Length: 245
Image (tube, rainbow, N blue to C red; front, side, top):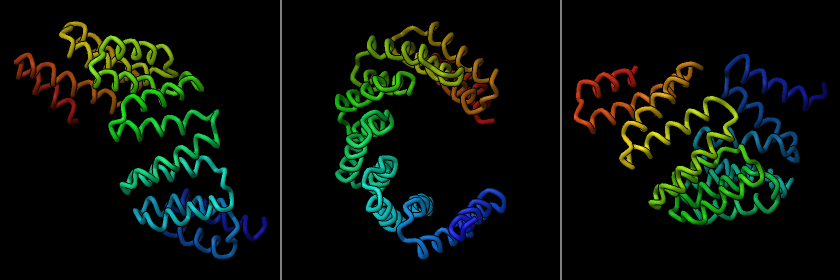
């Protein structure tokens, strides 16, 4: 291995074997000092500074990576999220739009731009971006967010239609269960209480069958809310205690 390759091996060993993130961070800094034109190390430091919540330093490293590779859509996408975290929504939009223009056949930047618009209340623009992501990759998983936005807008028929599409396109039982979980909530809002109970039980059972404790807990939480709304307080407490386990 070359000296540069040895540095990368040592950094990976520190992270994966020694579980020493600080040692990895020091090695990455050493690589950047010795090889300032190495774009990958600036990307790695960008991620490391983000984890430390050292945002100005993270942005500086991202910009160094982009100076070396201006068409690095992945870094632009991640930078967009960092700007969201710091509240600079103008720069976030600029970064994400640039990522979309550089990688127009990649669903991820479109989905990310949709999330930005959702967070800022630009619902119609969010739907447009999420739909564009799905046109590129039909099982990308944006359908449930589109359904949520239609629910916020009060168009429950459209919301349920998108949830059906989400379930059909789901690449795993986990995602399918999430679709049924959402359908339970919308059914309950629409007054279809029995259907809602069936959907959330279906989702919870499926999550339990694949050992997804987080999903099963989400189902119990919704069941607890349903019981509480109906005045079945003992059942609500029981479901809520199961959710807390």
